[in-house]
Image (cartoon, rainbow, N blue to C red):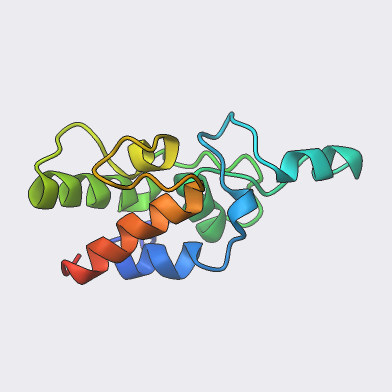
Length: 127
């Protein structure tokens, strides 16, 4: 696990871009649209996660808990650095964007759209 580290926004994009929007939820205990399908089909792991959980699942495909280190192997710190240095927003990070539509214009109604908006802005800014 030592070699698993998110250091660039492009890594986040590469992991998240193919995951369907309905598989994003507001936190690892939250609900997502895939949960109903999973329950009806007897599948405990519905594949739903917040953006950090999806990163964890990428690095640990057999771990269906998708909690990981709760930092997305550096993704939380990288997104926090971007929000602080580029937008002057302190004490928020990609989790805040994932969980809320109140962060600096990342206000799309779909969780994935908000997170990808953030990630694309990070890439444009050289993160």
